[in-house]
Length: 116
Length: 114
Image (cartoon, rainbow over all chains, first blue to last red; front, side, top):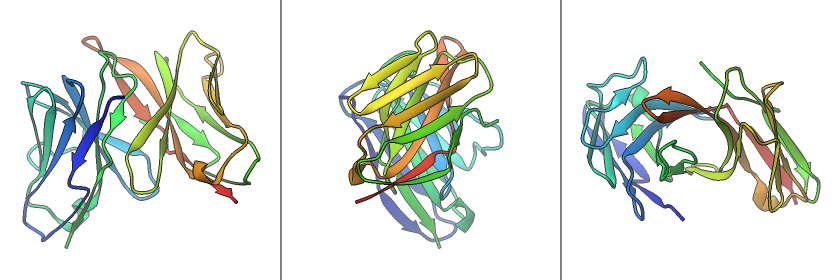
């Protein structure tokens, strides 16, 4: 089946530093990948849609300069949290789909970011 | 805005019992999907039901969809301790340019007691 790999699974960084999270589709090409943020005991909040070879589409309220997304190839999208602050601490999850209608989605295992 | 809303928010049952979770939504959809999330992990796709389907089965899972009531249910039969997880419904709606956007509900946290 379709596998999405996300790395790292956990990261702790100091306030003011930047963190890069990678999302790879291992056995399929993904023109589109999605980045979500999940707070404890909450649902997934779509942050942005990452499109290969073009700019990402950000959801309302998500700072594009803070959450930099790069989708340089059909199998890799990266999310960089720049100048991280403690309030950026969260669980970040990426997903991709093999089908044009994005159904179903295949998820990475998520990245737990802790900013101290 | 939040599309899918699951209820109950939390459900605790004994192993062997059936678990039923419900999802309601507000707008027209192309399909509805159910996902499972173990604590601290990503989501795993369980089942997809299209808007023109009423019921679908997959192993111990049974999903129904009532588009007139804008609701869906997920039934897990003969539950096992390993079914303990959070379950999310997600509605897929056309978002333009040939793509569909998924909107997730808040989830139901299922605990199956051995």
